[in-house]
Image (cartoon, rainbow, N blue to C red; front, side, top):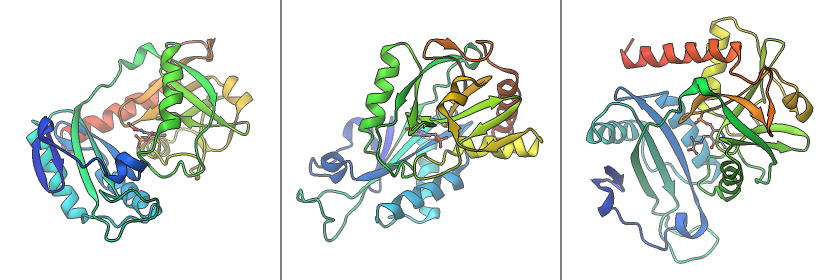
Length: 280
Ligand code: PDD
């Protein structure tokens, strides 16, 4: 695997970051995960805009222009043989003597790698659990400091579930690494963007697609009781696309199988990908 580090393309085994990098010491950095289909970066402008927003939120100057990001990302995709991939990129506040306040000057670290795309077979559906949202109050920043998310996802995996759906003060927010949709009486509902959820690129695309197809949806808070009584639950992310949840805390969701609204939206999403693949 060829990775990108601070201006160079090199094999993963040769990439080195100083141990005093603030990403390692403090988790002081932000990241993006961008799917690639048939060698084409999916929703690239949206991902770069979210990266810009995350960097602004942590007061870190974007080290690269849009054009520079684009060139480096395209080279990385090519160097890893195109096709379907998932690009991980992160920007940290770089190496410096350990001290909480920002160093002067800041020399950011930019790292990018390609991982194999690993979309689960969707029609099987997945298990999910609920957990208290133990994260901080700025979940809109795509921070590399993910300890709460890591612990919550691990709890899910230990009981054979694909995701932990996080409840904050009585409302379902999102998953440990995904956004959440429910369906009630045929209407898809997802929480509005706020500082308590990540503005998911997949989430936004689903909303856009439902709007275009004139399928009913709402952006609204989801009380825990509504989550538990819903007809369908989906979790969405760049790496998992749209997964139907068929049991929540071991109780069936709706009929206990992937629902009809999920199926419609999933097909629209696949069509969208197909168009990208064939460059329409
Ligand atoms: N995570 N919410 C959280 C907390 C996430 O970590 C993610 C994605 C999402 C979905 O966002 P998007 O549709 O833009 O992927 C929502 C990535 C995939 C990860 O951490 O690997």
